[in-house]
Length: 214
Image (cartoon, rainbow, N blue to C red; front, side, top):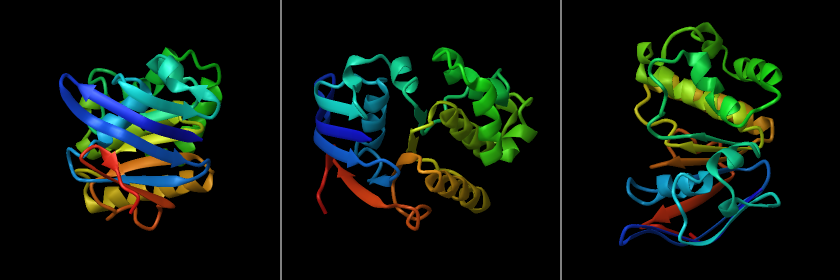
């Protein structure tokens, strides 16, 4: 599903990722586990094309992602939930969710949106509310719904549980478990395994920009 080989990323003169190898098979939920600053976000942004890789390869199914622009990668069925949500404050919940579908000119919006609402009925209830009217936890749910619009095959979830109240964290874990049962491949970045330990099929420990074999 996703194969990363020898990935290097520099930001200016600083090396953020060094020779990263990661193999995520189809239908697997993998945990990219490491402390803040370990390189988790940089790795995910590199896969999505938001940060330019300086070396290595990223392959998704039969596609060389490094040769594609960000919206072209999303159009292949990859959804991304950033750590800081990145919602447009003035847009409604539904409009924020539809943004990647519009950007990729998705033809199946009418079928995909109801499916996302089936996984997360709470999003339907607040679909007309602007993002700046939502709590931080609600915005996290919207960010996941937005990722699901394009993420039909692969989801990249960056710190999905960070800052959530326990009840909302449990709800988000339930949604992720439901997606796992649907055989969606998921790479989940977290600083620990507290909320996702029972869900993970594989763990990829990352420290100082490198993934260990432990």
